[in-house]
Image (tube, rainbow, N blue to C red):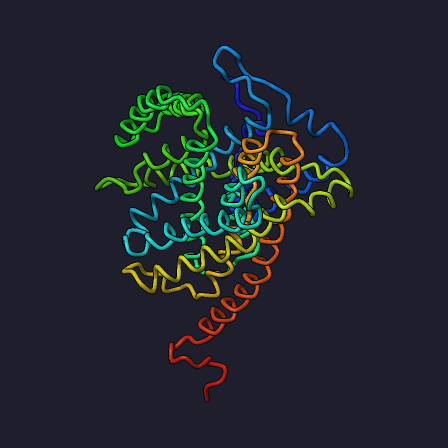
Amino acid sequence: MPTRSPRLFGRGSWPEASRIADILRQETIGGVLLIGAAVVALVAANAGDAYAELRDTVVGPHALHLDLTLGTWAADGLLAIFFFLAGLELKREFVAGDLRDPRRAAIPVIAAVGGMAAPAVLFVAINAGGALRGWAIPTATDIAFALAVLAVISTHLPSGLRTFLLTLAIVDDLLAITIIALFYTADLDPVWLLAALVPLGLFTLLVQRRVRAWWLLLPLAALTWGLVHASGVHATVAGVLLGFAVPVLRRDGQDGPGLAEHFEHRFRPISSAVAVPVFAFFSAGVAIGGWDGFTGALSDRITIGIVVGLFAGKTIGIFVATWLAARFTRADLDDDLAWVDVVGLAMLAGVGFTVSLLIAELAYGAGSQADEHAKVGILLGSLASACAAAVLLRARNRHYCRIEEIERRDEDGDGIPDAFQT
């Protein structure tokens, strides 16, 4: 009987692949890949027409209404993998984590509402009597970019900060998609949306019975995605719904990881190494149009309204809503978070790309001057928000690092580092 070659099937190949997968599961690595892909996209988009031609290349079967551009496949298709993992993580927090307490879960939900209302009000105030149709552009937080920035700059920040941002961003996206459906979608088809409930229900039934067979689950997940996409609703919603369907807790007497943990372990490297970086490459390529285009955009009230909305509106809206909820309701802020941490998180929520770019195209028409100026505003507002949040949260990261170091040295727990005791 022939034996397998050790070079092809020996022990060295699988551990190496497993090691690479473990590296890709680290959020810092995924964040670096995402930001790097975004920088490459910005350079490519302003260096010539090749980037736009690649992004606008149409692939897929026309008969199934899936003849989409590569950019749409990345934003609607690949990003659904990321939203599936986000749904898994958020459900775990609601079922077994910090958000299982309704009073604590209410805070980021209220913050998301405030973080959408304030930017819209500022945009309308700046564009009063002008192009008000773009009022929703600065209301959206890009969950993938925001979490990537947080992953790169934080190593010692409280875990509650990430949970807060994740919950806020997902609620923000769901509200933004609702806004698109109500105000910017002319061809919403509820029949396809109702049809999506059939494969989603079958998927839910199987995972609740702890079925792991990929040949059953993946076709149902793909069909759910396709039907949601056909309905006119942003298809990443399908990823969130599929993630929510997966059980988090293990059955009594079950050994090994639960189903949610199993799926997260399998799909995290795919999301970090492929889905999110490719999405970033195709969505972050904003053509500024040279110096003349840049200066022209800066004088447009559309651009100014978006920059102010993302940078100031998000910060003010999220912080004020969080403070009011904690002060005047029974909702509780995470005990590990300080108010300065909330300010940094609110700034970070001003990073808006995917949904903001989508709303800009729907509001002003793809390729129009207003659309191009809106994209410049999204780029500048997101960059300003990310930089300001990075400065503040890096300072907070050093603060928490010092606290951890003092606690590590204080082995007897009396509050005084052992090195200073006599």
